[in-house]
Length: 173
Image (tube, rainbow, N blue to C red):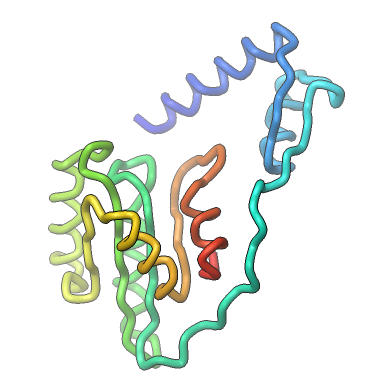
């Protein structure tokens, strides 16, 4: 259960606060979480993203809207929410839409991936969704570069690497 995992993570953070361990964070939200657990301001350091971000590209004027989600195919990442949202909004868009979900088989739940494929079919959007498993680095970079928007519905992220990769490729997030 995803909530049990988050609760376990908070218990671990609480133990680190009690030990007086310093925290490095990339967001004010995460800094607030450790402050709420009792960390003092002197124990929290803000560390900005360690890359230079290019100017964001514009949403393509091509006939279709290209959506991308990158992450493990597991329930905590909530790709099923993205597929459901696609089914709700696609009929109301004034142009075609395409969703690409990219993830690694090694770090994913194969049964969950099959469930996502069935969900897309049941909702009538299977022809709008591409599932890419084990994309190469070049394929991943091409996906970021050609997407209009990166979408994440994850329950929690510490440092969301796909967001950094998307920014670096000039993809909106």
